[in-house]
Length: 130
Image (tube, rainbow, N blue to C red):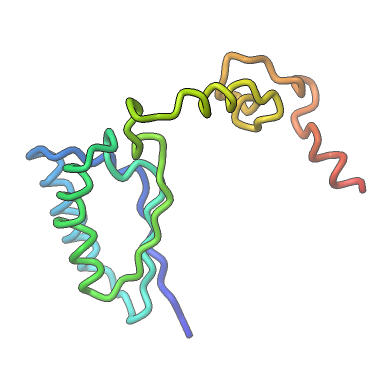
């Protein structure tokens, strides 16, 4: 069985005129694609701008529901904008930031210096030689 995968990323949808227009244009573009009957549409990261419920409600109405009605299977991998930061668990966040083994902290995304500054493969080299 053949599948078509449509990958969309970083929509950063906000419920305003400009973003509604962008979604309409995206729907028009998707309608032009020669898609078969087995379509998986994957949304990776930052579907909405700030994780607010109304943003998800409108995005569902304007984009996700029509895709589902058209037979698309939907896969969503949330991004950092898809959460409400004011509801984040501060204790869990603090524990994450204390984790010196975190790949996020040492991947160039942080002010914390990498212990693998001179050896970018770091622990992966050990795994490859085992």
